[in-house]
Image 1: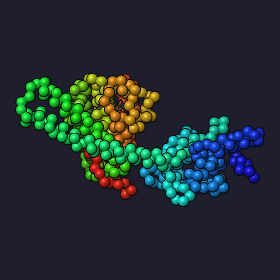
Image 2 (image 1 turned 135 degrees about the vertical axis):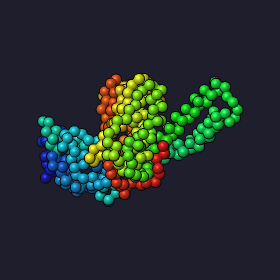
Image 3 (image 1 turned 90 degrees about the vertical axis):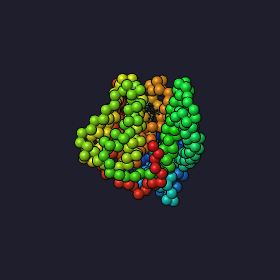
Image 4 (image 1 turned 180 degrees about the vertical axis):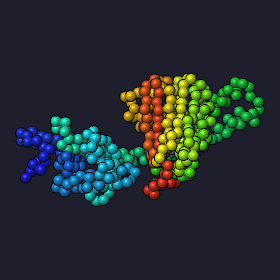
Length: 384
Ligand code: ADP
């Protein structure tokens, strides 16, 4: 029996056409594995064999999720149901993901994979996974994060000196100032505050990416945690005459075990965005809804909204909406990436609904009783 006869997915073709398809498959620069409708490996190209360390004979006919063990990027072994190849059989839609494959020698290889269903007359008859080894990319990413972390730390020191001396000048310790001098100092102070926030965001992103955010769990009342960050946000809202309300009913049921400092960072980012991306005289509403297993928090605004075409990119690093860039020049596109990562750490979920020019609602959940994962490193506390 030839290799192709093993494969029910490969239709009978003219011999020269078949040879051409085989050559194309073998020459692809990415790893490719196809399976039948039961997840059994039906084809595997040389790059896939090289990445996984198995020969074609060792892979063909094997049940893919069992033969090739996968781990999520956070290091947990993936169940059969969570594997991309299983998910596409359920949803019928392609899945792109980063994960680790265990190769034949037991090493974890970081992989970026896109798995798609093979459809014949709209029915899935198998799956195709196209993947590549991203070890090098991860290393470059790590070096980039290390550089940003180092640069941000170095920037902090001169900035502290600028802040201290401008405050001393503004307070009149070095002599009385006239109105113009005071106004100029206020501009310097607010610019250095913005720079400080930017450096904090950069440092927090590098901490998340290196897995060195510390989580300190406490039993707290969510209302009080939110009220602690409100004054600073209200100042921002006042300038634009935006009303900010906090809707909460049963405060006793709002007690949860979580990390209050991380929750404050999340709220500051989401409410800060709601105020920033809402025109003057608009409205921002924060609502807390206790549920049996978790607490649902909604942050609603009557702002410019997120264009439908870019809604799937909203949590990506450096993303900024086209409608926003035109109006609001300051921003890094890192806030929501940070927020999503922090909510993941706390065991919650985030999603949103938005309509351009009408408004946006961000929703997130916090589990009532967050338990620490032993695999997480708790080294450094997030800085406010
Ligand atoms: P930044 O605010 O620094 O640009 P974020 O990651 O916090 O970065 O947000 C990314 C983008 O998402 C924003 O630039 C904006 O286009 C969009 N966005 C976030 N929140 C809202 C909101 N409440 N309303 C409209 N657009 C928003």
